[in-house]
Image (cartoon, rainbow, N blue to C red; front, top):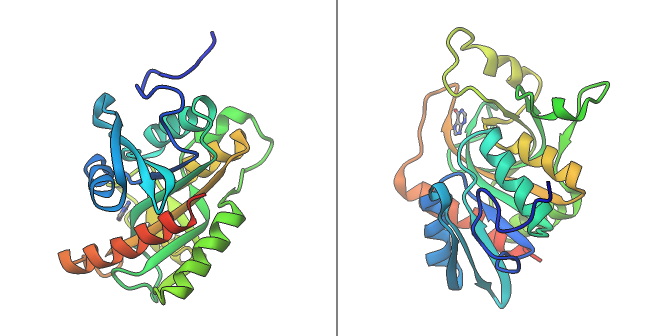
Length: 239
Ligand code: HPA
């Protein structure tokens, strides 16, 4: 079977998606980004409401597409973008629940690595555990930008879980926290794993939306301001 674009899940024609794709989890956030940050944005996918748009930012062609929630849907879309649309860079722009004491609501997290409970990497039949890590050039550029913007951020491990509502083990985040893991979310490991196999680049930039240990949640105005910082960093480092 020869796979080529348009695909099962993306109706864009070859060439309609830029080399760099920003990926929020939420389709409506993809629409918001296209409408508020890109010029001349054109919608290039709506299959399953996984909206994708291509436009320009400061003259650079950039796409934005939703990933949906969790490893399988991030995996499907990232795989098709890298392998069937010649995408080189995917930058996840998402939210995350803090588990590290020093993180505050609205802070940014750059995911240097992602611990995970997803079986996503099992398909490669490796004789050990794959370490899901960010692409260093994207990470370095993003951290440089964050410093220039005086954004408040931490760089480190996140935990990508397949289970948002664990039935029994409510203390698991505490144990991850003891290992220095900064925050929890659901997509970064799958993105980094798919990028590694495709030989492409990936980075997750996350905004802390809630504190898992304290139950604190983001207010609408902080969400907006810090979301803007995250978006600007992602767009500035887009190649
Ligand atoms: N768990 C998983 N994913 C998340 C969370 C969380 O608490 N907050 C934001 N994304």
